[in-house]
Length: 628
Image (cartoon, rainbow, N blue to C red):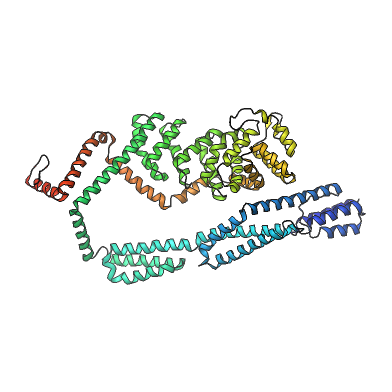
């Protein structure tokens, strides 16, 4: 064989790598194998080989060796079968159907006013119909490439639809509606506060508010500028403030409220009770903090007040900050500085994780930090950003992830898995199973692969030969070397690569050996969906800064602003009701409120107030006045 001929043939093979049609891939590579085995390697053979490869889509590094080509033919066949099996599995579990319904639902929010959204729904619907048709027609026929092509086209439309939804959210109608509504409210509020301007500008402002109902971005900006101009003109013309009629109505309303003394006392009573209750709860939390901290009494007193500022900043309650500081104190973060730092972290984790409680955030971070020996200054991006990016990108929440980690993280760390590998495996399984029992499933696998019983975590005689048994079943060794176990992630990755070549019985025995009888479905899910685990690893490798980016979004939410308002009220209660004075005065105040309650019940509040006012005018002092 000449060297030139080898070079030319290799060039043909390299050209074949770039072809896009898989239709005759298996047939063509077999043809190539036959030609190399049986034809004389002359120009005519070269022409035939080039023709055979012309429509191939083979990413191969083929040498002029028939055995190599036959092996690669086998590999291609296995890859096609594996891909078909994965597609069938996702059909059986409803994965494609759920994808289609969820994305269609999101697009329909915009389709009424946006032709691009409607067109995207149409394209997605067509690709889904073609996929379901191909699944029925070709999954067991002689043209599996039709099904694979339909799946790829559907996935392309899914990705395109997701991008379109994000684009519409950022610049579409929902954002415009929110902005337009806010401006309309501002105009209405301004006109109400400045009723003097109604005669000159009222009609114009009403027209502007009406136009905002359907205003696009350009129109919105024009109306906003017109409103600013009107405010300037009103100020110059001395038309700011309320008209005499409105002012008189307000004075009358205020005067009426002054005489509604019963209502005033009841409201004041409720405010007092609410403030006392808030301070009482904070005092209880502070006592618990005192047990777990190294802070002195002056430091505790300072922390009591500074916790309110932290709560408003982090979107949680002051009581939660004190409680979290106690939890962190038990772990050794007991100084004022470290308690504040860790409370901020767990509060931020709660805020960026809808549905997660402060206790779940704290306990979850504690579990991971202890298992992987992660320092406080590494928590933000070392734990929170990794979990949050997975919660954003995959079909599970931050709460799901942290719950599974609490069940599994210690065993998975002992099983030589990194935190990223643990999260990735559990994410891949959860996407299919949709159950937090996945965490316990991987705890079981990590223990059993080291010959330990999942309940007692002690050596299990029935598992002493697991290395040999698993190798006999799959050909995969669980040992890196004589003394080192492979990670659970690596073992499952290697098994997933040979999975489709195993018989149904061998697969069942393998799952039971690793995951036990009760959790074999979790093992099957992660093996079938292992590509998701690898995608998750890739996402986490680029997650730095994600938690802080999410925080910047959360602080603009209504819930965050309402919490800040509530905690401002708590801060007022802290300042009004000194805890030491409150302890001495609670009994007196209770007695006072009981007296008022009895007077209202027996005499009505108006006579009491009038009598008290009369006594004050006459200079009367002393006890309560008896009325007939």
